[in-house]
Image 1 (tube, rainbow, N blue to C red):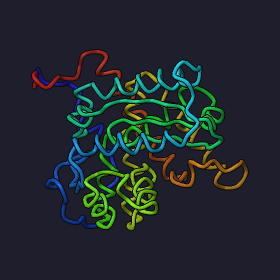
Image 2 (image 1 turned 90 degrees about the vertical axis):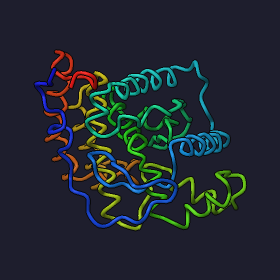
Image 3 (image 1 turned 30 degrees about the vertical axis):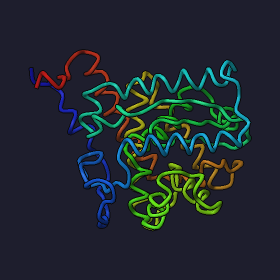
Length: 290
């Protein structure tokens, strides 16, 4: 059976990669999202180890809400739906993320803080601050943020950032992946580098990773059953916040909100909705049907 919908044409409508990439560290550069070359500093197994340890460190100093709290239950429900979309093989295959989530060990926690932000560390370690829960208007807006953050992890962006920052990679390698063997400044720097919004030496690369996470994220939230149109309203409010008309949320310190982002989303949303409808109708072939 041949798919009547060319998901490749739909899913690979991304901005072009700018600039050259350095040599890989632990594994050869392979096909990243959209088939682009992607240098990686960590194998998936190492990503899981680093993600676990970084997550433990962050949560150890945080006011984590109980697992049975309404806030945690809300975040878990949204995240589990998005995580479910990562198991839709045709979707992952066509953006070259077929095996991206197979080594993920999903964890979802809510941290009491007025920070308007969220994160997803390598291998599916998600944290959401209560400030973000207070800011979003509904679960569709929450899915906008979480789809974006999870997309960074699916696309191995932290591993790529480490590959593009050899000093950080060498520190991690010298410590055998143990954060407790790093100095305080080294540990803080590495944790910042693992954050989805970490700044790269190349601003072009940083912008590219953000666009890539937007692109993947809008497909994830759509296939998870959320309304992608809500992403436009959320990021438009972020754009207004960046202009000073609203209180500036912390998320804008590492996720630039601008007209270009919103324009790209306007292009991708109909494509995501069309792909999702075609998948629901059974018009997309599985791996064994091609």
